[in-house]
Structure formats: structure tokens, C-alpha cells
Image (cartoon, rainbow over all chains, first blue to last red; front, side):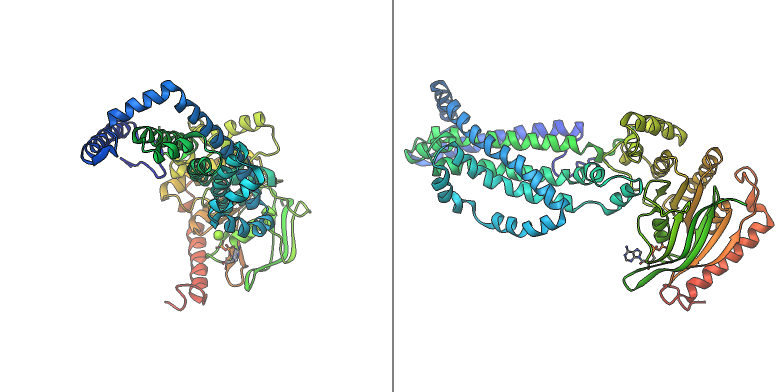
Length: 266
Length: 260
Ligand SMILES: Nc1ncnc2c1ncn2[C@@H]1O[C@H](COP(=O)(O)OP(=O)(O)O)[C@@H](O)[C@H]1O
Ligand SMILES: [Mg+2]
């Protein structure tokens, strides 16, 4: 199985990992080059050069604005995503375990998941105002759906043969759920978490644009509307960095949780 | 004469239209090794699930020591497809089958049985890291670790290659000499049946029923003597083959129906 890297971004073999790092750095260099070229050719300074952007980042940091905005955004994001995890996993698991409960609820969850979440923003503002609660609620609503639905799907995908094996040992229903069904749902759950984290970050920006204008989303609007393009680019890059850090952490977690799949025979 | 351990009294069971078992009666003596031989679809797996207490009959009675069986109480099952928990190590797989022991006791017991089947070195390995033969030994260790009075084995060696299969048969007999148990062993293989059984139950499909009982009187232990060289072995073997062949040729549901 030489060169086998699995699916869903499990950790690469040590030899491949170094190569990928080098290639990624080369690609980053290429992007920076293209960016530099674009900034030189597009007229009227609409695209700031990498150097100008770096200066802008240093200035925003020195003024403390960047940290403040990142802090505000992370608070919104963390609160909403955390609540989505705390609600979504138990709800999805319960829907899968108690079939009548799941069959009753799932159509409503599907309906809610299919409704564009921006549709709820006016309602949320009316109910919760423009503060952190409203923002966290917008993040929560976006992130919770994929977490519920993937946990639900993971529990439903349980292995009937393993369950029969467990029953034959005299295992209780609780023991079967804990040792067979829930661990079996983990790969689905991690996919749900990754989707939830991504949607949650998008909704963080959306929330900051639609409610009281704060955080990275707020700066994005401010700098975009006033054509401060270097500052604007700093914010875009900060958001991209947060996205990469969060999803990469979840991929690392996924790799650790699915080590048992890797056939590295002693 | 052995004391009766397991008894089926005119047991019938249907899945919808399909009659899986019809009027099956049988009795297993304590520490007797009974092999069920029959073509696929004749209800062999269903029979084991009934004795394990995983399903209840539509009609008739299944009893273990006079009472209806309860899963995991006196029986342990070994499956053809191993059914190991892929995210648990070898040791955890065995320990999982011991829900009535404390964690520490279960681990200790698991280690003892891993040792017994020669897998001590692989206690921390995941099933994906083991070969087919090792996985089946692990599945066997898991069943034995529960120290069941009754071992139910559903074509346990069918997915192994010929050599691994023969080694596992010897291994099973060695383990049973150390710690006897009542065994109900399902197989397709006439040779496996003749090597292992005290008694063979021949089953026929549609509806599943027991059509013949054959005593297998070869002396034990059979692993040292060459049982296969005995004249009676050849005689029983060709008799069982013929019965199986007729069944398959005369079964309208079989792929070989009506062939010569
Ligand atoms: N859970 C089930 N649902 C429906 N039909 C089943 C089920 N289990 C077994 N059967 C049917 O019952 C018959 C006997 O099955 P089984 O006991 O698995 O036979 P064997 O193990 O001898 O191959 C077959 O016709 C099979 O299709
Ligand atoms: Mg079967």
C-alpha cells in the first residue's frame, strides 16, 4: 500500500509529509508572486502589494485594532460554535438512538437546514438585539445543522453485525451505544464539525455585518467601503488564517481518532 | 450417557414467507461436540441465534439447562466474519465481551486468553494490523474468555485458507481438551465435520430441518492419530457427500438444481 494516504486528510506518511510541505510553500510563493504582479498591473492601487499589506498589518497591530477585532470575532465564533457542539452532538445522537424521536424530528431539521439562515437574522435582531447574544445565535444556527445531521447519520450508519455480536456477549443497550454505536459515528461527527466550523466562521462575518458592526466583519465593511484596500486585505487574510487553523486542528483530531484504520504492521 | 445440556423441541421459525426452520428437535449432551452440516440457506445460522437467545422461536421451545437461553449468560458465539471492533485493540476486543467483570478483571482475563491463542504480542494491535488467521484466533479468544458452557460457532474457519483452517481445527481441539465445553459448530465442510464432531446433524433446506444424525466414533485426541486414514472415515465421508449432493441437486432454490 505504498503511497496510501487515505481519505479525508488523514496524516500522510512521514516521507510524503515533507514533500507536501515543500510543495505547499512553493505554491504559497507562487501566489505571492501572482499577487505582486496583479498589484503592479491593476490600475489605481485597487490591489495593494504584499509589502504594503504587511505594513498595514503591522500598523493595525500597533494600534491594537487588529487584536481587538480578532478578539471580538473569536468570542462570537467560539460562543456560537461551542453552543452548536454542545447542542448538536447530543441532539443528533439522541435522534439516531431513539428512532421514534429521530423520525419525528428529522423532517423539521431538514427543513430548517434548507432555509437560508440569513432569513432568520431580522427575527434574531428583534428578539435578541444587536449584541453578542444575537451574533452568537446567528453563528449557532449556521453551525448546529451540519453537526446534528452528521451525528444523526453516523448513529444511523451503525453496524448491525457488530451490534449482534455485542448482544451475544450479554452487553446492555447502554454498553452497545457507548462502545459500538457512538464510536462508529465519530468519522461522520468530525465531518459535521468541520462543516459546522466553516459555516460558523462565515456566519460570524455575516453577523458582524448585519448587527452592531464589530470585529473582523465590521472592519471588513469599514475598510471595503472606504477603499482602504491594504487594511481590507489584512482583514481578509486574518479571516483566512482563522479558517485554516480551525479546520487543520479538526483534521489533526480526525487523524488521531482514526489511527486504527492505518495498517502499519509491526 | 451425557446429561442433556441444550434442547430444541419442535422448533419452527419463519422470516415472513421464508420458513427458516420447521419442526426441528435436537438435544446436545454436556461437553458434546455437535457439528451441523448442510447447504447454505438451510437455517444453520438461525439455529445458532436461537440457542444464543438472540431470537425466539415462532413455535416450539429452546432450552438451556431447562430454561430459555439469555444472550451471553451461558453461550458465546464465534462468527464467520470475525466481527471484531475495528477501533479497539485486541485486548479491548476481548475485554468488551466480558461485561460482567470489572475493567481490571476483564483486562486480566483478556490477557490470559490472548496468551492461550498465542496473541500476547499483539495485545495492543488493532484488528486491521492482524492477518486473517490472527483475527480468527482473536475472535476465538473473545468467545473463550467468557468461559462459556456452550460455544456456538458459525462457519468460523470458512474464510481462512486451507492451511490456516487446519491449524485452527487442531487449535480448537487442543483448547477443548484443556477446558471442555458443549459445542455447536456449523460448517459446509464434510472434512471439518468429521474431524471435529462427536455427532453430525445433517440439515436440509426449504424448509430447514434435520434429516439425519451421524455418530462419529473416532478416538480422541484426533490431532495426533491420522483419523483421515481410517476406513470408516472414507465411508462416512462419501455418504455425507452424497447426501449433500442430492440435497443441492434436488433443491429447486439451488443454482445446481436438476444437474447431473
Ligand atoms: N433476518 C432474516 N430476515 C429474513 N430472512 C432471513 C433472515 N435470516 C435468515 N433468513 C432466511 O432464512 C433461511 C435460513 O437462513 P440461515 O439460517 O442464515 O441459513 P444458513 O446459515 O444455513 O445459510 C434463508 O432462506 C435466509 O434467507
Ligand atoms: Mg449461515
